Length: 380
Image 1 (cartoon, helix red, strand yellow):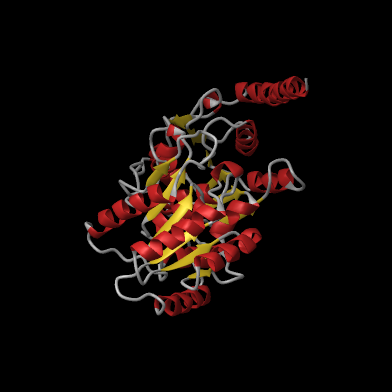
Image 2 (spheres, one colour):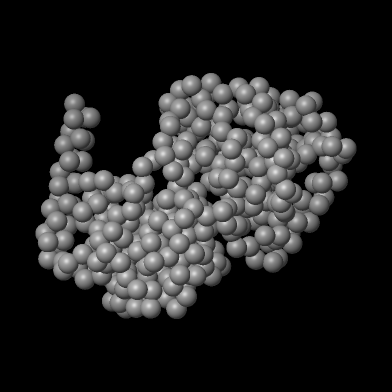
């Protein structure tokens, strides 16, 4: 009964949102198919997603800057994703907010009142909140471009395709075609900007950890944080994996990576693995964690942001996925042929075993060694 009531409320809310939006859209002028870069002075980008979404968007911001060198780029995003952009100059202005919370409309009004030449909605697929926010910013006159929209595609001047079989990083580049820019897939993901003092602290810590590695040993990273229950790989699995890694790769050490709230779990995993495992330093910013991941020889993680952070630094990754083909195609480790271990269940990864991960680690290391040596250090 409650499910039926909630479904009715949800449908009512969507109707309440869409009807005024359709009316407003009907008052807009003719759609704009493209724009000359010389005419664009202010661009507003809407990306109200999470950390991983922002990481894979960094190549777009770089290429957008190259395409529109004189434009002022404003990025509107969530507090969580804003961590990626701390002190980053790939955009000129960062507006941090949550949909329809507190001063949301006030912040958007201030951006709109300064004037906007084009709105870019990077929120993939249909979103009531994103389309309403984009239309509010556009104010019936400014071109709106996006990608991957289905039912809401007709609200935008340009809706670039995303079929779910292309990586998110590649699909995000397509809106650049609106300005005559290069919409091809990026050669690689882009590292996060890191302040020199943070980078130096991390490099010093990595140097100390490297002293624990002997012979042909490697520095492995094990990310025990998952973000949501369906992506959790148990602590006991990570312990077993760490112990097997030490037997399979003598002289290696493991760095246990975690979100601050899960540090107790990370400490327990490290203590159970033994003296060759250590938890990442406490108090690191996201940029510090990223630099640390960049100094690893390989990262093992469930399908979360550290997978994409690692690939931004060219660190090899073995990532654990649910049996969800679209999600795997869109979010697999960028630039790797191997590196995805897929569960036999759609709502979890509990069927993935340590042996399956070890097998994929060996395949990824073999793939990496077959390529020209690339820097993966924390100095990016």
